[in-house]
Image (cartoon, rainbow, N blue to C red; front, side, top):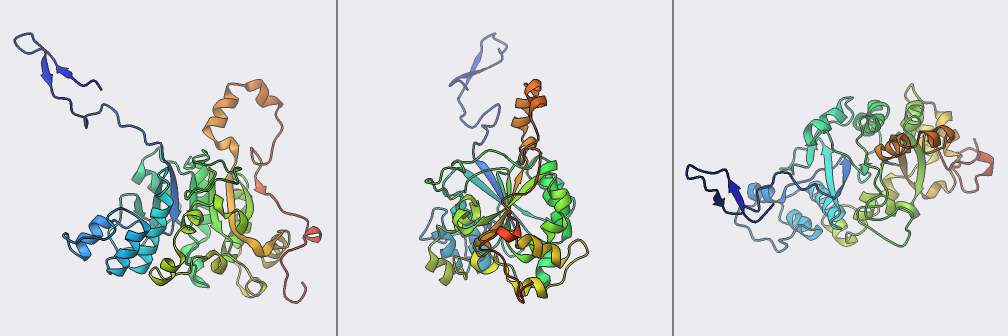
Length: 361
């Protein structure tokens, strides 16, 4: 806007000057930061939490939003270990100043930021609720199911139920909630590290038995929208939440936030005892899971499941092809573009470092 603006002419016929107001804009400046959605995490509001738990006149040693501030709030008992841990990881993710983190959980233990949403992501209407809360045009470069605390047994079945896999995950694509932009770093640039990860248009799930079971069970619908691959620990820098978490001081995480830094090595692995001793829902069998696991190379190094949305669902790709109809007709179907499903698997007999079933099955 110009430095001086004018009101319509008054009774005298002269235009009246008004002072320049830098806060007065005809349109909001569009934020250029990409967005990451963390499922199963919370985003505590430091300002409101201090006011409610400690008092408005408290002087923090760490006045800037940071991991150190989150640790201080836990030490002062203004936040629980869990909320403090979530806050530290969220702030670490946002520290590169190119990404906003949004969170979803059912926690009620603190006062939370506007970018936090209290909701059940298992609900079939979750994506609609997400848009109603954050706007119809909201898009996320990465959507991540948190891996930092995954109790064994029935907890997984109730917190990550079948509808999350066969409704919510497809709906992320169907309702255009994924942003296909790569972020600050290109995913193929191995020499650049970012606390907000690399690559876009992806959903990350922990490599645990529950997720593998339901990926197999919902494969027919998921393969219509995603290519599915298994990510080893050597490629976890692509994963925004892991990349952010890895920058936190390990001693602070352990001593004040209550967890060892490498929780993926605890919760994102699968043993043959688990596979053989677990119950299975009607949409998947034990043999189907074993057949899949046997086809994964470097099985013991896998930590995450990556669902990459098919490129045909990228609005920019659609626009490009709409402008070139002849080229579109000539182009054959391609995995990752318009064909989904598992990628990177081998025939079980050719896998060298694979899944071994107890008893030699």
